[in-house]
Each structure stands twice: as structure tokens, then as C-alpha cells.
Image 1: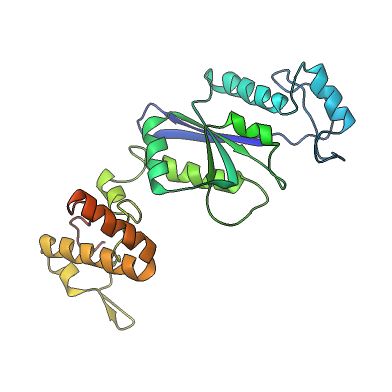
Image 2 (image 1 turned 90 degrees about the vertical axis):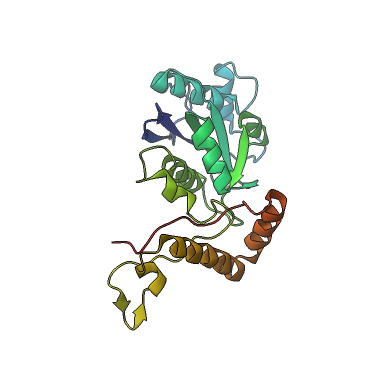
Amino acid sequence: MVTGQSRMAERGGMADAHATHSTHSTHGGPDAQGVPLHDFSTNANACGPCPQALSAVQQADAVHYPDPAYTRLRQQLAALHGVQPERVLLMAPQGRPLAQADLRRWAREHDQLVFLCGHYEGFDERIRSLAHEEVSIGDFVLTGGELPAMTIINGVVRLLPGTVGTAASLEEESHSALLLEHPHYTRPAEFRGMDVPAVLRSGDHGAIARWRAEQQRLRTAERRPDLHARWLQAEAETGGVAGGATNGAMED
């Protein structure tokens, strides 16, 4: 099992992300916290551990097969931060699809995230009860849950205060209001015969905002009709305040 955690400190934009890897070549034997280590790579029976691992589990006074991993996870967290996990996320293709709203919720509501990442055949089914949520980053399968966990860490940390330049820039991004982001341009004004739209060089911030909002709608309808349909529904339910673009001009 590989476990990872991202702890967001003091809401000041400082965060540390860290992963703890436990790949062991011996059966039994204590780790730094005195918890027995287990190697399940030689399991002959898909429904249970090999005899050596089972013996180590029994010596640890564990009633169920998954318990040692959970005990070790809790002790590692306590030793590192003096706290218990606040939100445990299990990375699994069967989980609920990840959405931008999830990243905002975790960044806003939790100071610590703990990730449970399986390998190859996934988890003993009983491990699922240890997680608050099961999350998938898409309809595909990887060899492990580490990359999905890193994706979530990146998405959450960048929403913390001080990580990006301004909070307003986060609101203009794709998926923040069910619409894809508008096109971006920078200098030079002409590149290989392609010009920056004149409205972005006009200095008229009202016209720029209207252009960007229209581009968001057009781009979403063309590239993600499913999102556009959800946006139209949200517009109808909220009276036309579901989302749009803000002011801005051509970037340096």
C-alpha cells in the first residue's frame, strides 16, 4: 500500500505535500513506529495473505487482514503531525468522478487530506470502509493511485490563498462556472498571420468582458456540449447568474 497526504497549513498559502511509501521485502519486523511491516507480493491466494504475512498480522493482534495497514497509517500521521486524518480519499476507478467543485470543497473545508492508493488489483474490499470518499480521475485504469493523488494535491494546493496571483483569476478558469475558459493572447499582436482580436487591444474593459463571456459560451458549446447543457440548466435555475467572464485585456 502507498499512502500520501497533503496538509494545508494555517490558510496562509503555505502547504506541504508528502507521500509515504511502504514496499517491503521481508515479512514482519517493525517500522519506525514499531508497527509490523508486511510483504503481500507473494500472495498465492487472491482472497488472503501468504502464511508468513498472516502470521505477522496475527502477531500484531489484528482481527482483520486490512487492519495493520490502517494502524500503520494512523501511527504515521500521529508521529508526523500529531493529528488524526481529517479527510481520507481512496483513489479508485470505481469512485465518483473528480470535479473542480471537489477541489474547492477540500481546499476550503479541510486542513489535511490523506490518500489511499492501491496497486494493480486494487484493495481488499474492507479497506473501502476506511475512506470518507472514493475518487476517480477518469474512465481509465493506471497501475496505481499515486498519479491521481498527485493530481488532486496539485488541484487543491493551487486554490489555497497565495498560491496563484489573484483569487479572481481562479474564478475565470475552465470548469469554475461550468464553462470552459475563454481564449488567451499575449504579445506580439501578430504571429504568423494571426492577430490578437482588436477588442482585446481596445482598452474597453466592458467590451473585453462581454467578448470573453461570449467566447466562453461558444467554446463550451463547441467542445463540451455536455457542460454547456448543464450551464444552460444552471442559468435557468439561477435566473441568469450561473457564470461568465470578468474584465481583462491582452496580457504582457
